[in-house]
Image (cartoon, rainbow, N blue to C red):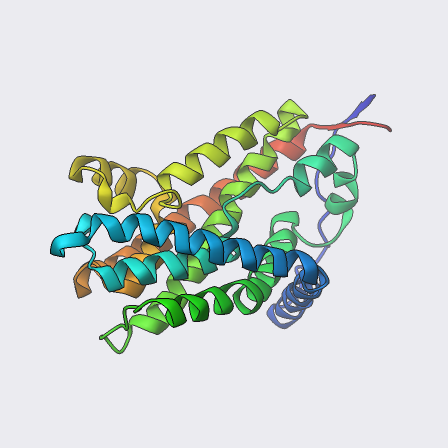
Length: 284
């Protein structure tokens, strides 16, 4: 093992906006093409999502018997929550992502830092490409399957669907930003598996992927909504789609997601700058 200090190289002149957008689009397309090669994995994931959709909706449907509204949802809202939720699981991708941590451990991250593009920007573009492929390959089919088997909730407000698209995009950016922060821990720990385990548990419970956060007491919901970014990953996009809150809260929830994005992305750049101030390179 050898040690070296390194900083990301930066071009003498910042690229103009058009070149930057072209570069971001190229990386976005590369991410889309990369994940489109895993067709068998996509089919297996689709089957799993549909089976789990039936199981989860059956459990939640039992809570809504006799006209009850668990968490304030009626049966059609619960059906949409479950089936669209199964679809966007792979879009938001709250599970583990270790690509940056592995490159830190192997020393390959030095190549990323030598490129004239910020590593966070490059990985984010590729992840958004992955998410775009997941919308087509992993989201549409489970929703259609759920619609064939159960009655789904149809939004009544004209702006709900475009607002849901914005909320889903912000949720995906939030998810990747938090996963990137977890991976940055490898610059100090070399092995980020402990941090990843904490992330998996926290994102599963506090984002609403295991159960709707509306099932929690109101004080618990308030803490999660205003003190953590986790509801913005999964719960808020689904609540926006099923119009669970009123119009003001529906739009306010998306604004809250935007606030968390505005907080976390500068935090990522700051932590990344601190990490690369002193870089430990394994293997020379």
